[in-house]
Image 1 (cartoon, rainbow, N blue to C red):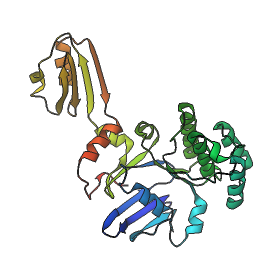
Image 2: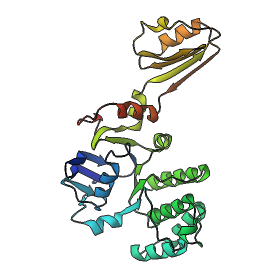
Image 3: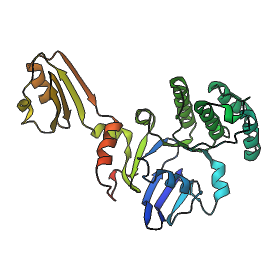
Image 4: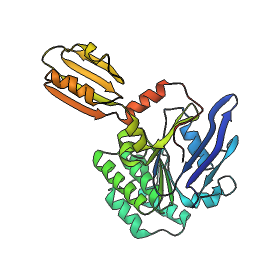
Length: 306
């Protein structure tokens, strides 16, 4: 079996008495999009910095394609393209000068590929960084992360500041990258984007992994939301005997239910009372996050680790 793109084993980081990351164990298989999510202050950025070798773990280890990060930092960095959440670029340099500078640092660069990235993202290369908008600076950062065609891309809030057209183009770029067998480790607050793109998701909270599973399995286990409108008020007690049904709202003829059990009995009751309108949808990752964030962190991850 090929080595995982990223393998973390009981990785921990403490600052005095503060445990930023606690015993994080995680394998990221090569050739997919892995989403690494969590609220601010959860330990997400600290974990990413340890994967990159920018911070030393207090205990545990981080490996990239089988190489220990601390022992082989230069070799590991040749495999990685990194876009930080807080992008800092040389303010007086133009995009063109930045690309030349980093191309020299990387060594061999496919200039045709670089030019194609600049063109498809409509990157401004002739003006100094300090004169560019946040979105245009972000596009520079994306090109810098992708330009040397690394085997592993670590992207922290990559679509921040991008307009919808560029977000769509970036998603196409990610799909093409994975189609070539490369790996994306994605941190994002755009949960609909994660739900569309990622194969697996890990959620970190208070320094611990609380979820590690496939997006499909997580989505399949989420409750459904059923909403209906009626000409008159509907008696909530009609649903009292149904398992896995929670009434979220029942006012002015509008009924909203959360259904984690069988859907057919709910629909039969609603149909018997002639709804004006009826919708049923699966809960999103946003709703999963709200649920997970409201619970205390659990040292044992839910879901399935692979």
